[in-house]
Amino acid sequence: MRKFKRALAVALSAMMIAGVAAGCGSSSTDTSTDTSSDDTAATTDTTSDDTSSDDAAADDSADDAAADTADEGGVINVWAFTDEVPNMIKKFKELNPDFPYEINETIIATTDGAYQPALDQALAAGGEDAPDIYAAEAAFVLKYTQGDMYSYACPYDDLGIDTQAEIDEAKIAQYTVDIGTNPDGKVVGLGYQATGGAFIYRRSIAKDAFGTDDPAEVAKIIGAGSQNWDKFWEAADTLKAKGYGIVSGDGDIWHAVENSSDTGWIVDGKLNIDPKREAFLDISKKLKDNDYYNDTQDWTDAWFADMKGEGSKGILGFFGPAWLINYTLAPNCGGEAVGEGTYGDWACCAPPVGFFWGGTWVLANKDTTKKEAVGQIIDWITLNCTEDGLQYMWANGTFNGEGGTKDCVASATVMDISDGTLEFLGGQNMFDVFGEANSYANGKNLTQYDESINSFWRDQVRQYSAGEKSRDDAIAAFKQNVGDNLAVTVE
Image (tube, rainbow, N blue to C red; front, side, top):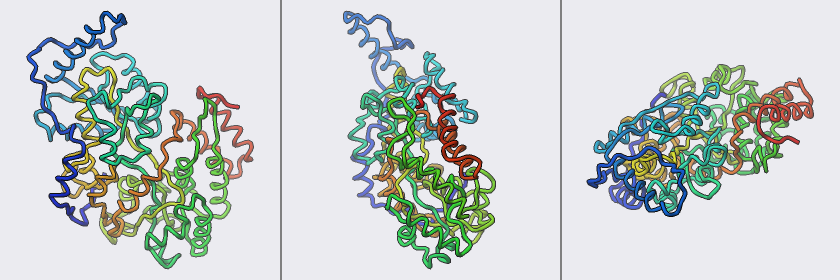
């Protein structure tokens, strides 16, 4: 990931920092170890078969002994699909040299679906090699917070975190809380990024087509907040007359459509096609029939070429969160400084519909014998909003020292005291846009099968828009794919 140069130094008064530090994420900064003289080894079997009430006191005593000895140190097993979360935990240890645990990381990429089966097996097997902390991304996180594997996730309250109070103090984006809440109403996972979406556009193209590159004005032109696509299509016509496309491919609109829908793919155990998602058939076909785009597919060379301005026609923009700017647009813009490629020719504004795209949630194993230590780490990553917390460093690009990549974070409290100014965006403070975007995102329309169902759906939509199938045939094939491959009732 390419690092951005800081365009504006972070200017925070000592009083402001002290005020925030006093009320936010305090539990994660306490890394003191238990001073008990009890040296009894902790048992690794935390699920006794004896359910007799007569043994309840003995069970509690064993749990206390396990907690006491765990504080003396050992190994914390961390499972993730990239090195991002493990590196955060290494930073936590660096900042807390007295933290007495070693970190054993297992990183398995999501390529070919390898991560989930391995994680599921490790959780089910238990024992000393089981994950203590594990990460799940938006595409499958509900499986671990609300779906088939949710029973393994430990409520944050049981980790010694004052969860709701810290959520309120940090002003955590609500959609991330909704996604991380289990069927019993307990928070078992939270993220560190906020991935509410905006429309990220080329300033030069906006100025040529609309006469302005001002984010507030471009937002009006594309119908920001309208909850429909009428103004967006008008803008597409204006761009077409100037020889431009409004987006690179239909995938650039899909995530806005998917995550602004009212319901998810599964309702009461049955496949459900939300009307807004079904309308994506019409959106994709309209883009194709009117030549409003370059007909690319996301994550292909042609898509990246449009970020450099090297496609068959210039493309106005892309729908996405801050990470799309940092880790996709910036590395593929063709330059590293203003005037090189499209670097510095970008801005972001509010989209027609509120949505989010992606993100990583951090969970703990309910059977971990190191709950207090695990809680300190997770609190520091997801809830601490002091200048020493992960989210402050993540927002201000100081995680690896000054001048690093700035990103939007789950805590609005942190965003309020952070500097989101980017040279890449022509000096715009992206937090002004993404902070509001996070509040509009909906976290109640996900299912544990989204990764697979989205793939089936988008494949059929492309065939329909290309004229290879009728609308009815595309929908029928989609339903058939879901019924044949997933444990979902299809009617």
